[in-house]
Length: 105
Image 1 (cartoon, helix red, strand yellow):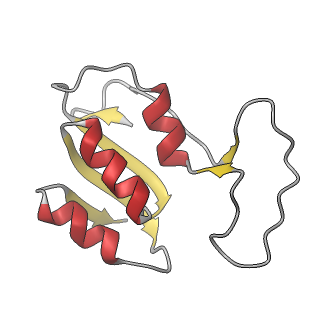
Image 2: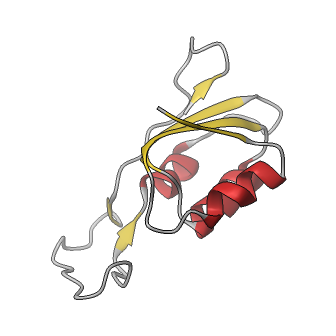
């Protein structure tokens, strides 16, 4: 996550388990893993920037619906950049519905 002038990194997140938990979750069905936090979730947890600061988000895959809603509630997210589409694309429409620009890189 950066400021909209790209001059300051506000937070960094990555996919992984919660601190202190083992990295041993191997779900059979995609999306069924209950131990992982998405990079967006970790980034939001690590962001201590006030709501009024405009933000750009960079992710490898477009956000899932829960991460999209969390990004909306983070406040002042102006743009989400992503490289690959997640298997469900409706969250992109949710982001657009509230005025967040979504850009595939």
